[in-house]
Length: 388
Image (tube, rainbow, N blue to C red; front, side, top):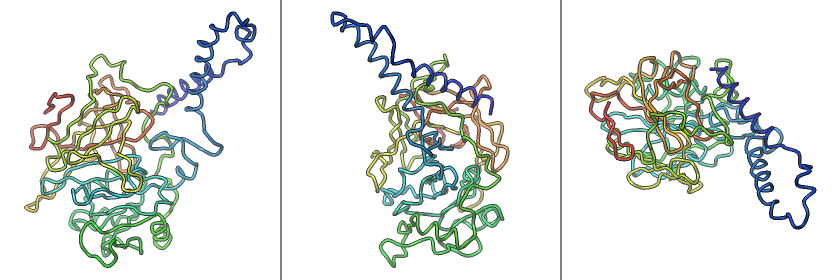
C-alpha cells in the first residue's frame, strides 16, 4: 500500500517538474512581430502547466494534504482528530448543519426500513452549529474507528453499543448520558428547552470544551497511522478509470432499491467532476452554506447483515476480507473487493487485478449495503439494475 502511494506521489512530482519549464525559452523570446500568431499556442501551454502546478502544490505555507480528502488543509486539521457525527436522515430533519465539512459520508440501513448517516467531519473547530444529532448503532462505531474520531451521538440501543462505547480507547460524547458515556456539556437544543427529536445540536466550541472536560486527546493518538486514509491521486493526473476495459458508464446512481425511504441518489456533474447527492428527490444541502453535497468518489460496499431481534435491530459485519462492491468516480464504475482486519486499519478497496484502488482528490460517499440474495439490495446505475 505504501509503495503504491509513493508511486502516485512520484507521478505528481514528475507532472510538477514538467509544468515548471523555463520561461526564457528562446523560441518565445526571439519571435518577430510577424510571428505573433505562433505565441498563443505556446502561452496557452505554459498557462495550462502553471495551473496544474498550482493545483498540486501547497497554496500557502503550512498547508498539507488532508488525510481523508487529499485536499490542501492547514496542518492543524490533520493533527486534530475528526468528529464522527450521527446525522438523522429523516425528511423532517433536513437540511442539516456542518455537512460541508464532511470528508467521508456513510449511509447504512437501520431498523424500521430506515437508514442513517454518519459524517466524518474535519476542520470542525469553528463550526457554529453541527447537527441535528441522533442515536448510533454499533456498526457505525466500527466504521468510524479507523478515522480515530471523537464520536458525537445522542444515545443508542444500550444492549448493542454499550460494550464498545465504554472501551477505554473509544472516546464519545453522548447527549443522553449514562452508562454509554457522558455529554460533558457538549449539546444544546434548538429551540431551547425542547425535548423532541431532531432538536439536538452542538458546535465547535462546545465540542472543544467537552473534550477538555472528558480528558480526551484532541490530537490523533498513536493508533492512528498518520498517513493518507485512501491511496489518492492529485488534480493533474486524475483516476478516470479509463485503464479498466470493464468499467461502465456511471453518471446516474439510484440507491432507492437499498434505501427505499430516503431514495438516496447521485448525479454526476461532468464540469465539476463530482457527484451531487439527493434525498427524497431533492438536493441534500448544508444548512450553513446552502451547498449541495458533492463527492469525488463513491463506494458501494456490500457487507454481511443479519436481523438481531424482534425490534428489527441490525448487525453489519464491518470487519471482513471476503466481500465486494463497486467504486465510482469520474462518471465510471468498476467492481472491487474490500478488506478491514482490525478497528483502526483503514478499509481498503482493491480492483479485480488485486491492486489498491486509487481515489481522486475530494470527498467520498460510502453506501454500506447488505449483500445480495436479501431484501433491500438492488441499485441502478445509468438505468441498469444491479442485484448481485
